Amino acid sequence: MKRENTRKIQIGNKVIGGGNPILIQSMTNTRTEDIEATVEQIHRLEKAGCEIIRCTVPTIEAAQAIKEIKKQITIPLVADIHFDYHMAVASIENGADKIRINPGNIGGEDKVAAVVDAARERNIPIRVGVNGGSLEKELVEKYHGVTAQGLVESALDKVHMIEKQNYENIVISIKSSDVLMCVEAHEILAERTDYPLHVGITESGTIISGNIKSSIGLALILNKGIGDTIRVSLTGDPAEEIKSAKLILRTLGLRKGGIEVVSCPTCGRTKIDLIGLANQVEAMVEQFPLDIKVAVMGCAVNGPGEAKEADIGIAGGIGEGLLIKKGEIIKKVPEDQLLSVLKEELEHWKD
Ligand code: SF4
Image (spheres, rainbow, N blue to C red):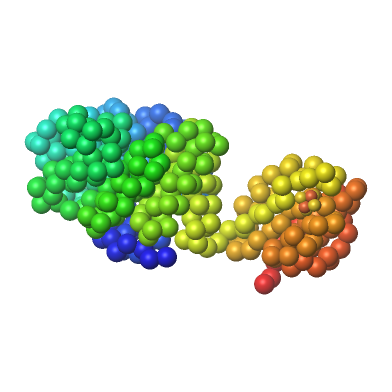
């Protein structure tokens, strides 16, 4: 896949753009002022695979909390600012590795200049974020509604506000809950700028609808070589966002590593609790840094054949199951030991 040749931007100890791996972001949903809860959540997300974390900064206390939070985490922290430039400046002073603002709603050019000066002093990037829900009235009128063209024009106008201050340490995000509009906006934007793009579908929904909308949107965008960092937005535990983001990148061939679990859809032949087993396997394999495929199949009749493409697999039977490697049956295993036998195999896995 051809990746767009975007500029390299340093965010704390990570780099995005310029063909670097697409990094996974998420956002805490704790009160940022609550340092202990926020650090605890960031550690959990980092363990799940989060590479950049964003925290909301609605108060000066939250901006001050960044200083302590930063001492206790290793991934870069992005401060999310709405409306008040003081919060942006305070977040930068307290060690944020990047800030996310909409320069159009923080109170005018002098306020933008104050934020840019603070960012320049520490050489930290500014993510310019625009959202379909808050597109300027003039652009809605000009394009007869919220459109991809309007979103791009809005984003580039905001970028120019920062460039006018002679600052180009910029990342851009355009978000819309309309998936196809979002895809079109990214295509237009990628043609018109070489700043790295943060890609995500906003307000995508709860676990199922959010995953489907995000997967479709991100796949269509990333598959064109567009995008340098992603966030899957879900109404749920942010750890679910990380899982989905990793899976999307892996499915598109943009990430290696991690066990891929494939499982059959179950049918009338299934005689074991395959749904429960598949969920247990999915959770269990997360601890193994192997780049292999594991199959979880419902029956001994078709399971081994269907699991041929997997490196290792298990198939259910009546009261017992099978351990399978590359489609070959290795041994019979009592049903209640299928999970532990598979785990043991993974512990001693050699290619
Ligand atoms: S592997 Fe067996 S149980 Fe699963 S769908 Fe195929 S035939 Fe049905």
